[in-house]
Length: 314
Image (cartoon, rainbow, N blue to C red; front, side, top):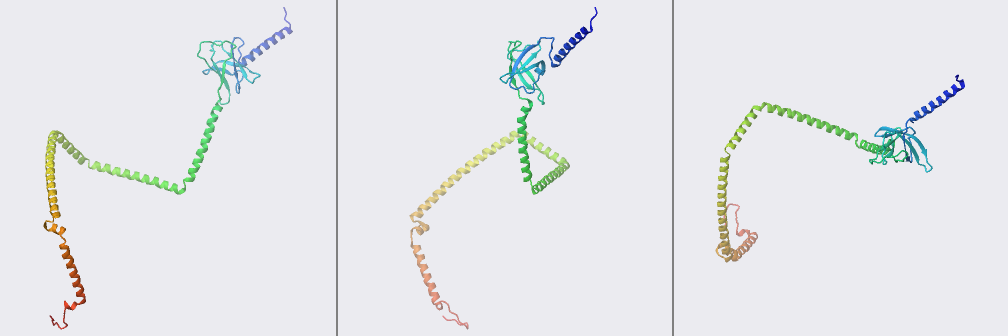
């Protein structure tokens, strides 16, 4: 049987169309030879999401986005084709998540912990995570504000730190360096002195150790001596204190007796305090002396006489 050229052309055209359809679906990520599970998720915004983008679980691809359809209410319904070998719980959340800084997105499944499985054609709960740029933007704004504050602070510091302050600061640093150098020199000298006197120091420490050993060996005797000294000192202190109290009492009694005699007018001091005759005599003597001085000034010749020729007149 002879096949016509038209038949051959028709068969080749059918094969080419079939290959084209299969290749197109393959490039889109559709597997025409396997029956995949279909799930749906609704989003308000699917910016960055495209058909054939992956569906991931912990970074592992289990499916792809097959369709995106805009609804009358403005919501976008994403059709998800999932490999039939994976079970999807009913409480799984289909989260729209950014996978790169360029804005490319994927559907990430947060698998539910319940045992009930979702059936093909079910609509899963959806959630949208902010992309990386949106997450970084608040941090960027804070960083810019912080950089602005730092710039203003540095400007203020630059204006505050004048050349005079810088010179003073440099001098302070030089002084500190000089002090450290002096301390280093002093330490070196001390080390040298300790090295040169090491034998003497060793002997001194040996003597101190011997003395401390003697004290340790005679600790009981020293304790007994100190106890005896304490007892003796207590006796002396008590004895001296009792004698002092007795003498003080006697002195107070004597003073009280003398005061009583003075108050009674006995003795010279008592008469002097209780009798005003001494005052009267002193007052009269003062008046007589005053009159004598007045008369001496008025009539000095009565009391003093002299002669040019050495003669004497009675």
